[in-house]
Image (cartoon, rainbow, N blue to C red; front, side, top):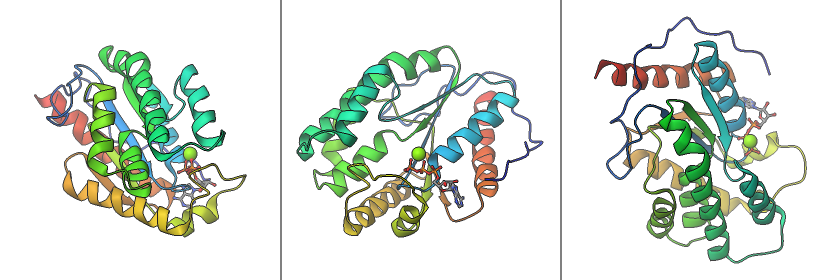
Length: 235
Ligand SMILES: Nc1ncnc2c1ncn2[C@@H]1O[C@H](COP(=O)(O)OP(=O)(O)OP(=O)(O)O)[C@@H](O)[C@H]1O
Ligand SMILES: [Mg+2]
């Protein structure tokens, strides 16, 4: 992957937004919470790293993390839920919610409270798309479960890297995990679920074509993050 040169756009130096979180979330003063969503192979890990690198180059503290598995307990849960014995859909949803509850309580909230930018590779919207729509548990119920687990914490910015699941799958190497092994219909449902959620909450979401070059995607993400930080600084 080509390296991305750092853009010249400078980040505002004053304090970060405290009121940009949606009304269902609990505002955490100080930091900025950014999540990346999308199907397998869409480029989430690539883009979370590029954003973290760019923010650090501009002097921000960044906590780069992921779900499931952003904590020690989370890594045990990740192994169980993606590579362990078969579990039914409700058990799967609860395992993701447990990972998320602990992740938010022990890592994400403390980081936001001290003013860091938290960049996570997947968050609540993945559960709503995969367990709610992919597994057919119902988007609203799965969302409520995760909102309860996290005390209502939603990101200020959620980037959807939108990609045809067949294209994403072709990018992957290695053995597929439990969700990657699901069929084409499952992945098409989750893609549509992400797009529906993004359309319903355009203020939080930034939907990008994941077939674009990685540097172009990174620049679009940087522009949105800069805008959100600037809006917070102006308040
Ligand atoms: N914009 C892009 N265009 C083409 N290939 C890309 C792009 N972004 C990432 N890739 C490549 O696609 C592959 C998957 O990228 P990456 O691991 O970032 O995706 P991911 O969404 O994190 O995947 P997973 O769901 O498996 O974690 C990697 O080989 C990466 O180099
Ligand atoms: Mg990844």
